[in-house]
Length: 349
Ligand SMILES: NC(=O)c1ccc[n+]([C@@H]2O[C@H](COP(=O)([O-])OP(=O)(O)OC[C@H]3O[C@@H](n4cnc5c(N)ncnc54)[C@H](OP(=O)(O)O)[C@@H]3O)[C@@H](O)[C@H]2O)c1
Image (cartoon, rainbow, N blue to C red; front, side, top):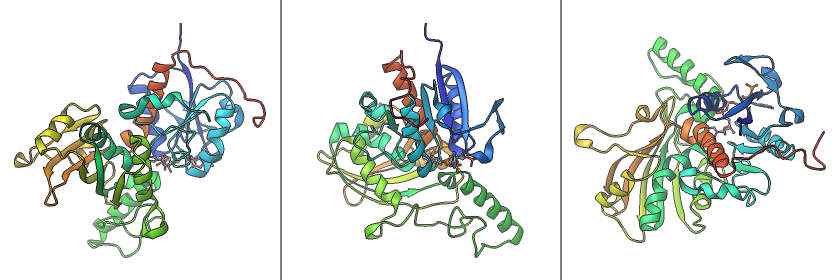
């Protein structure tokens, strides 16, 4: 009988890592042994009765599943090393999402892709992509998506703990001073975020796009298996703590009415329709915070004849921690006998 899995959470001290720990527990993931790993700065720290250890090759010995919630550079180095030590690495960073040998998975949409993972790594999509692709995928299946335009409203926790810390520091300061700030009180954002919006998320890329906007295009194409899909996004940081919203305008080969779209969305896994604007029932950031689904509302045909809606989900949960745990659940459902494969020849010692 299977008595559970050895699971490592790498980045267990961060905003996403701590959420992974709580979701593993609340969803009763069958854990036989839990290893909390982080940087040397956190070694010895106690979280939920566990002691944090440093990331080392030996930390992955005998580990079945390693969930990575660390910066890109750290996962780039350590996810392949964990896989070389025989673990399946589930990675939340951006590093491997476009690698053709790494599946990019949202279990409600493409769980079967998990089976093909030649590098022993499975990637988790970006939090903004996760927000709108959960409702867009069933609409695409029903009506064939042609073009998608959107603007995001992204919370500060999308920039991790430093983003949360900067917003709180600035909120305290603006309340004390009674006016907006001229300089940021932190390094997560280059402008003050309290009482402000910043129309730039991520680093600047060719053509004036940001890295977040480039990810939305590439990841949507990969997850939907639609390599020619047109996606136009503007990503904006707003002063909310948790949840990313996306205002979506989509064109389909067979344009649905708003009612037809609503019906598809009502039956879609992972989607909750909150759509009665006359009664002020619209999905807000706080609707989604701390919850699992992608909430969708304001469903209508816009002035250009496109299907429009607002989708919002908790970026730390569906956008990150929850989806990685759902990947782990799909993995053990498909492969209940999953075990550490042992150190692969040539792996670092
Ligand atoms: N926040 C989101 O909404 C979101 C959504 C999707 C994906 N992601 C991705 O998830 C990852 C984690 O994001 P986060 O928001 O949780 O960031 P965070 O709050 O800044 O946490 C970063 C974590 O990485 C650890 N770490 C940093 N450098 C390390 C090193 N050299 N070796 C080992 N561990 C190291 C930190 O450990 P220490 O505490 O010891 O420094 C901490 O546990 C990132 O790749 C991010 O892009 C985030």
